Image (cartoon, rainbow, N blue to C red; front, top):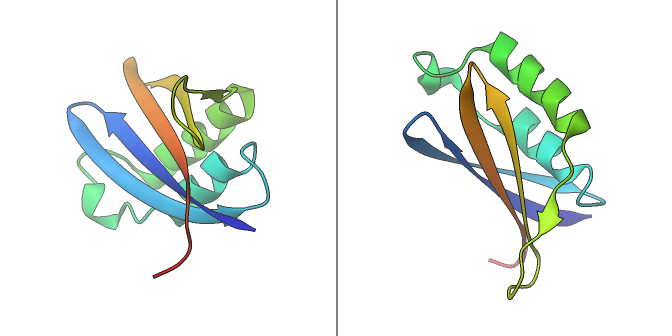
Length: 93
């Protein structure tokens, strides 16, 4: 498994989540599942997380040109664009 970092831009805020996954296809969902949103009640709820996970099933992350191990995807949540930048991250400390 590889460690992935998901940089999430949504409604004027930037958030970061990490998760381990076997592939780029599974990584965004794993990161969102690990994302601690308890302090973001004014931005996202657990129901929003469920909606986001469903939206991610339909989204294809595409590799960014000129950089290695970086992909981008986006979905609409509450009529706001949610941009997701996924980075395969070295697990070393």
